[in-house]
Length: 435
Ligand code: DAS
Image 1 (cartoon, rainbow, N blue to C red):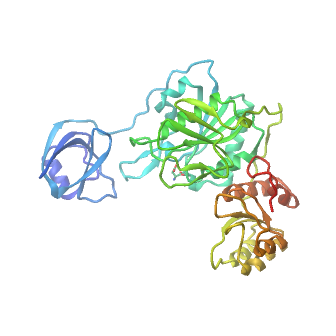
Image 2: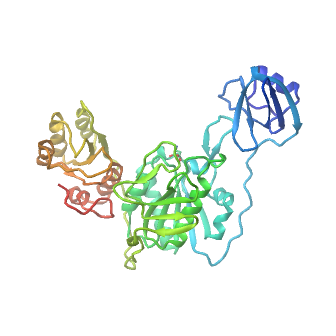
Image 3: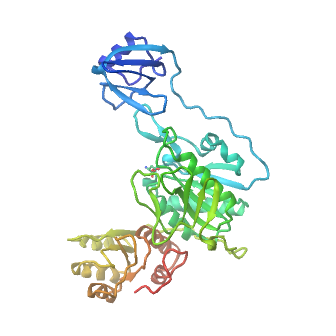
């Protein structure tokens, strides 16, 4: 069997010991003996380290110059991924559709490169988590398989259209497996695209790929399917870890959630709001009863269009406001300014903002404080911006405001965009006065 990825001195040591990838070996160093399974080397990895998978599932690297001896304990099989058989379906359970779009939840380590690659289909994902078949009658479908940093509003439209088909087909819930980086943009976009959905639409991702001991893929997917199958909630939600424990998942409103940590499994937090439910030790706890409010039958409507000629600009000291004019001259029809503090931008930017509005562009203001609401009547700066026509967007998150703006520009006349952006439509901003 191969010694894929090993080269130089290490390849010689392993060949002499008649080892192959997948074998159970003992590495003897000066200070200790370490037993494990010999793993492949990543193509781009250095040549000096050997990788051993320990019994606890973690991989360790051992440098060649520390190796005194290698003992072959037993021949093994080269690690490979085989999809387990499809779990038995239990008729009569709620019908849940799992739509795959990619991301870490559908990924595993690629031993050639060492990188995590989105290689697991939603069908395989289902097979990998047999517990799902005791919660719902599962159907799976793959829409596409991309990392979410590559999502566009066209993907949002495709997802919304497929969810609408599932609603018309009578599913009890829909789960969308998705990369975590832009998951909250998609949850916001779907919240606006799907008006009065009669079922839960649950987005779920993972911070750790399924082949790592600390993976949250399975626990998040089980929680998402459970909420989709049993909560009787109506709307778009995000289900991810609520804290360090695998047993506690938070259910966030699709327009009140943000990824707030690069790697923690509880990276997603409700902002300017609390989670609307929890899935704790396999039990659903509804925290916001309104999510279960019955929708008038036949009130569901799909608004799947988006116009991505919108920009989200963070304001900063020395803000290069000239980009506003360049963007307007290149066709941008709307801006979300993520302003400082209570919703401010430098006086030097007033001219560019006025230019944008003279060309018919919408300009809305959110705050880069993330928590809290803009209040543009406290300081003269805010009042100046209001006087030139900038619209305050209350406590709406900037990413939600961008998704809402693309949706408003795609579905409504330019003259209606201002009213739509400043009105609370789906719980994306508090009703209280905006100023
Ligand atoms: N690249 C990340 C994404 O697809 C992987 C992940 O976090 O799911 O969003």
